[in-house]
Length: 496
Ligand code: SF4
Image (tube, rainbow, N blue to C red):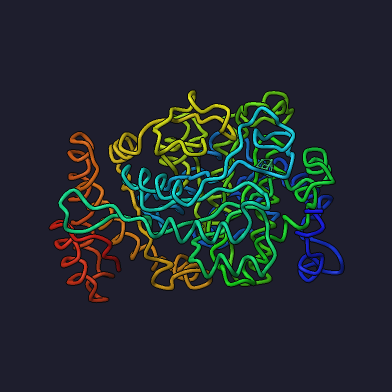
């Protein structure tokens, strides 16, 4: 019985307060109700608090969720952008998803990988295949990866730990032959685990551990996740990040699948999750995700859910999350169409995205298009453009691509990075590392058109760095200049 084998009740109970978890549905509905028809001045006061980079309370967040007046929403959007600028400046972090297995013991009604979908062709990548896939991802220009696994005994913690080490071991020579490129940060999206297993991932060098709650609404959760599966246990999933923190993984990522239940409720669920992590561990989530349900082969729910989220609502989701949890990264993925994705990145406060993504198992090395691998994907992508195209588009909008992975390698993770982000210090290091990694990208992978736009952007960034007192005051400039020159000459992976 896999369910009984996996779930350790004691590793749920220890985080409960008086036997209750942190999602109090009645209270959330009350908070949303109370926030209706918000007073303008109250909204402006809340925006001011956000601009001081402070996490909002549930009441404040519910008030922002209820803003309908277009002018007031415009003020919210501007404040959200300003918060992003203060914490993350004009950087966008890129990553590539790598699906290692589509075997799954669960049967989530919205997912193409669910066990009862007999049309799905199942495969778990061998370590040789992991190496091939990783090489293909590096050759696109990526440095950060999120490795994605279904829930199955064949891809448990030992398999995940081995594949993390395998991904880190792959090195590709740079075009000049002076150095090599590699994946420098492997984040993991996998099933909730017990603390002993999470420690194995920590020892293997995991970056961020990501588990999405899918929906925070219990009844809806029970409808979509059969009770006789591991995933049917709502609380085992709800406390996945608490266990990760306890195992030493202090960069954790939360998310909900938007379209399963009312979007305002899900935003409140994400906020309560962040607040409980802060309360119990002093550290909020490293990133927050809000993927929107997309058509999945073999899934009946994607078109029939009564809760599908419009583009307009997605903009509200991002603006409110940016303001409510100001220090967390916000991820919009290639599930979304290019125009909306661009809008959320440049005008609404998202900080991370993916590009040239392939969701089929083994699809990178074979260069398979989505249509050629349809029986092996979890959902369909809205944006199939190459990394180079997306980087060029954002550079045109004045956004610099960052492949920075310095934070966790310099010990700037968890509570340390949160404090540094709140004070605006980490952002300064990120700026230097963004320029160093963008220099690498322009030299090694950029098309002529991207290089042309990228060079102008990097010149502007260099001027800003030289003129920022923080860098000269902290004597960072000589090291930065020397790293920049060494990278331009062909060395790789120098970071601050
Ligand atoms: Fe399995 Fe995840 Fe799909 Fe559910 S959503 S069936 S757990 S792969």
